[in-house]
Image 1: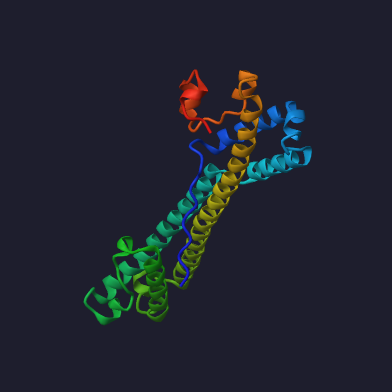
Image 2 (image 1 turned 30 degrees about the vertical axis):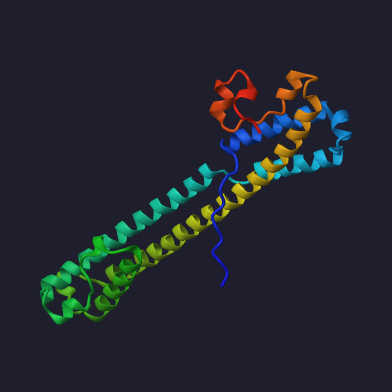
Length: 235
C-alpha cells in the first residue's frame, strides 16, 4: 500500500513575494557578473532557464487570491442555505399546523431542526420536504401552500446544492494550487541557493559588496535587522 503524499512545506522562511524579489536581485547580479559566472558553468542558457522558472512561479495565483475565491464561494453557499432554510421552514410550519408534530404525515417532512444540520444533511432534508409538500399539497392549501411555493423550494434547493459543489471546488482548487506554488517556490529557491553559493565563492575575499549580493537571509527579519550578513547564518 502506498503511503499518503505529505503536504508540501516551504523550504524558505520568508514570503513568496520576498522570494520573487530575491530572485530578481540575484538574477540582476548574475547578469552583471556573467563573465565570472560563465567560468563556473552558469552560462546565459542556464540564466535564461532560471529566469523562466521565476516567470512561471510569478504567474501562479497567490495564496491571497485563492483564499478570496474560497471565501466568496463560502459566502454564496451560506446565502443559498439561508434562503432555502427560510422557504423550507414556512412549509414545515404549514405541515405542523395541519397535521401536528406527532403525526406520521408531519414526520414525512423530515427533521425540522434545519439550522443544526450539516450542509449535506440539510440538502437531503430539503429534498424530503419538497417531496412531501408535493404529496400533501391539497391538504396544506388552507395554510397557503401553492405549487409555486413548492417549485420555489425546489429551485432554492438546487441552487444550494450547486453552491456546495462550488465551495468544495474552490477549496480543492486552493489546496492544489497552493501545493503547486510551494513546490515551484522550493524549486526556484533551490536553484537560487546553488547560484548564490557560486557567487559567494567567486567574490569571497575579493569584493565584499558583490559577495553580499549573493547572501540569502533565512528570514525577512534577519535581512532587516542585521548589519553583518556573516553573523546570521545566511544561505
